[in-house]
Image 1 (tube, rainbow, N blue to C red):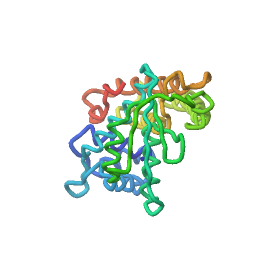
Image 2 (image 1 turned 60 degrees about the vertical axis):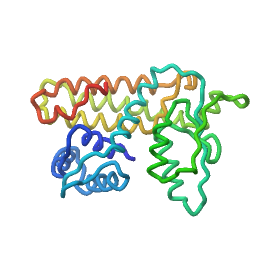
Image 3 (image 1 turned 135 degrees about the vertical axis):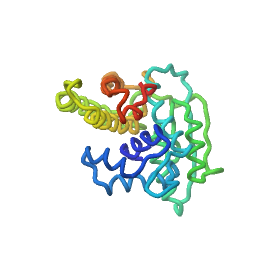
Length: 265
């Protein structure tokens, strides 16, 4: 799932239903084409995250709510104590089903797993519910195994962790995004009290989409597994704090206020 699809899913989770025209109006302010938004809605419906009960209206399905819950909980792992256990996901999918296999690999990486060996993925965090949902969605019953345990041999040293997850690349992305945030985004947004609710909401969506993008790529590992120069947790916290600032400046009487979930912060 790409970040704009996740964000549309988030917006749908905040209301009973939304019309395509509402979504187009919101995203055209952010220079998205109508076709790109329609494509995102098509993909979300195809994946079983949303439904269109009436023509040109969309509503979120339970699978969509579960996905939003799963991704939004990832940042909390930065403040969670790790007990040293590992979750090991095993699967064997034949070449004739490579499309399903590729889907599975992409989505388990977005959840937070990393590749230890061919068709063997690991995570320090418990994603049992997410794996169960994914298995059901891809009709993988009987072809996935999820184990929990600790390494007896071949424990996870920092260099090995970097082979499983591209931490150096992710760290560079965080540093670059922080530079953009400080040098371009904040000067454009400030002062917040001079902006209309619609303008504030556009900034909220722009920053929220960046946070969604980072949450899909960052495994948010325990501190024991991260390199000493890791910037991810600090940058993520900085972005979230500013997202909160944007949200509190949107008037409670505004149409856009209903899309701001303060429990996320």
